[in-house]
Image 1 (tube, rainbow, N blue to C red):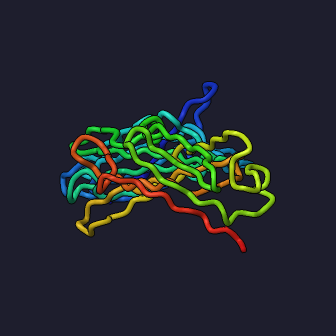
Image 2 (image 1 turned 120 degrees about the horizontal axis):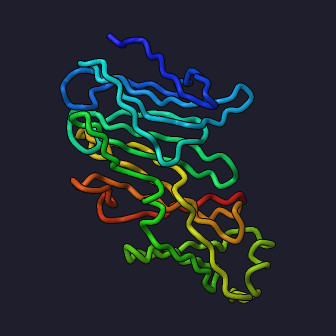
Length: 248
């Protein structure tokens, strides 16, 4: 049975009770007994922004509490998802937060707590540095997106975009007025998905492809990630690009 959870933090020599942002139950240490997992921290009454976000696990067998500090410990809507990602029948801990703002970035961590040892399996910041992208505008209303790390190339046809948009970038014959580049954003969204239905989950990462300004969305880089025993790597050895629809 879950015990009461009186957690306090010290600020300016005063104790304040922490806010529980998210709570989940599951066997995270592999002893076949349900454990209790919390995201706690601080939030003011007049703002939804959360600070000092900390992962806390209560061992269901011993009732002992364990806390894990997060490198990025503030954001919007901190939340938990428990499921096996790295091994069958033992839940790992997926932590998600939103950055807010126009970039729409997400902060994500995935922890194993097997045998009561916290191990970071996925870190959004490390993922953002993992791949080197190049987004180059080409003649004939095309954009080439290249993952230089994985040696993958994608071509986006923008010929159906608004005439005024294209006229700013291209001559009437379809040649570029000047060399142009776009970019691929940092991690925007990360979803847990069990692709093959075996009970062990994979991750599905989405990153925006950005044109000449932040609101100029060209598409999404989609990366399915599976645990290979040491790291999350692209499932099926590939990435995908989804193209945004255009109003006609």
